[in-house]
Image 1 (spheres, rainbow, N blue to C red):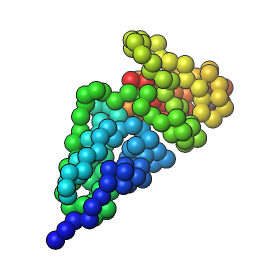
Image 2 (image 1 turned 90 degrees about the vertical axis):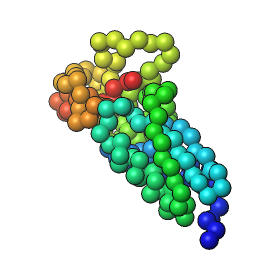
Image 3 (image 1 turned 180 degrees about the vertical axis):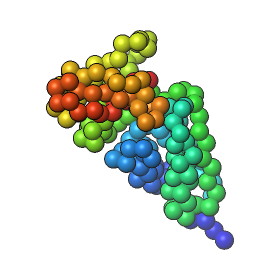
Image 4 (image 1 turned 45 degrees about the vertical axis):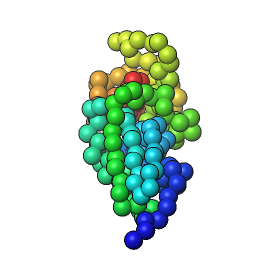
Length: 164
Ligand SMILES: [Zn+2]
């Protein structure tokens, strides 16, 4: 039995169709989670970094990545996760930030280099009306990755990412 030959490019393309389990408008590659793809003979290894170490969706991401590679006809798939270097919001692709905004999640401000985490939340815009007059209502949203905000201009609550 000969396994079909796949290229790293085909694997990347398949992973680009794997949605983020929490935000279906973006894929795991849009979020910059997939760090490495290697193809050795019949074996495909995918290394990914979860968006935040506390995200409860880790096993879902792992299974979705494995399923996407197996759908290419690959039997031998290894999905590894690594926390080094840690995921940063800077890895989110530019066009994905726009889709996050349209979905109603405030894209994170670029974390930048050498910026220390401070207690003051970064300026966040309301995704509905664009107002900067927003308040954080909780440190964490439904998952540890997000925060809950409320907009004082349109009185709508929305979710924002933590910049990490
Ligand atoms: Zn608003």
